[in-house]
Image (cartoon, rainbow, N blue to C red; front, side, top):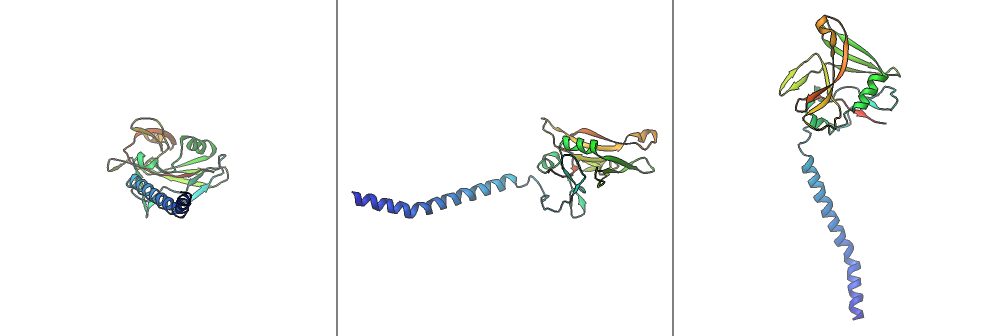
Length: 197
């Protein structure tokens, strides 16, 4: 009987590693496939390509902002909130830090439309928010205003977005301003990314 136990132990030692390796390889492969299926289609294009350039504005938190909106080739990308939130879009706190820490210059055209908002950081570096409009369903609207999503944890179909425009347009004044609007999450807005320190 002792000889049988020794043979069994020897068999286990020789074969258990192979069995465990095969089992772990199968579990890993199954998990990889399930994760791929789960994520497939959530973002229609690859925005994590490492091509985004970030600008250090000298913000107290060390947060860097992307130098431009995300693009596919040369075309600005517009996403509904559900897809944009999967990316490193700014939080409301990061947006408020940008507003409070930087100087803002608004360029208004002869029709009193906002052309761009220039954000000058404490260290003198600049990022520009050019007018974007937003896509309500399939149509581009409010083309002479700036929009982009920010993180929003509240329930419901309305989510926070930055909105910049010329508040004095009705009075023919040149008075750029920034707000946080509550917009329907199905609208498509451009995407601006941040990189935390």
